[in-house]
Length: 422
Picture 1: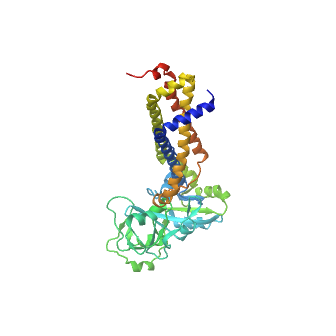
Picture 2: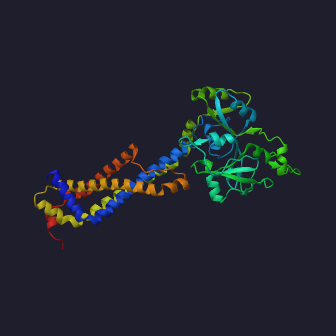
Picture 3: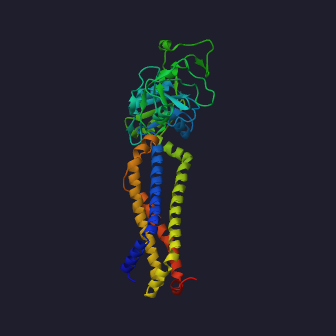
């Protein structure tokens, strides 16, 4: 038979079985939708991870591993083995090659969320994603000692609003933490959602971190000494040490020279890492989630193809007479084989295209919710080159899967279809 004739026969047969094929088509479309959706979420999660900080040329801290430095400096997980002196941080800020620095001091917490002490440079120069600056959903940066700015997740999960009072705890782990109850903080700002560790952070000033520890020593409050909130400004609140410093350079070409200069400083042992390189190393440690998403994607396709094969095989019993009649009027067994293969290919192509449409409609509808609630930024658009390759392999797999019913039909004898079953 000619190819055009086979296509017409396939189309006519499909129309006669439109309800059954419609269900198969929907199954394939949903498989393609889930495959593309998981792939885009996987890509966005990795992008969000790798772009937790952007525009920062170096992260400087006490000598340790680059992964550990990134964990506590950027993700606020764990603790520093040592701090760097404030004099070293100031020396770095005054370096002719440096455009700006953001000092970071960690160690305290609030109801499970890390507390980050910093200064105004944090709100002016910290960027994430594609050079996106921090924005305030409500309020403004802190400008007084006992004021705090909350990340979006902190405010949402703990139901805080501007003007609320919060109490910080000393330390970042354990069930029994000592609170700085005598020095409450007032919420003056809530940052917009970023999809980064910023969302889960409580921000205070460097002077505030010093203020709440004036009457503390060796990690415990000094017995018999209580410095009231109104008296702290009479003390020097300049920090003695900081956990890490984010550095932006005037010219990125000088990044390696400054990195060597920092490493050679014998007065205060320090190290400087490039955020992009360190984040790639860290992703190798925590990227098992990406592999899990890939496995889920593969299972989604397998389920869709299994549905396609089972549906076509199930329909063969109903189509034996139809196929036998085609044989009786001159159709060769290979024509029957190609007919079923052509049907499978058509269903896969239409299902994949329909899946692309469904995904973009879902993103258009739910995209703002995903961005607000989970920090996942998806936008309706055509598949990327990598996604087209995934869909192509899905179509090829569907074509191969449809060959099994075709082979079975090929082996059916003419008499098997024309002779009624007892």
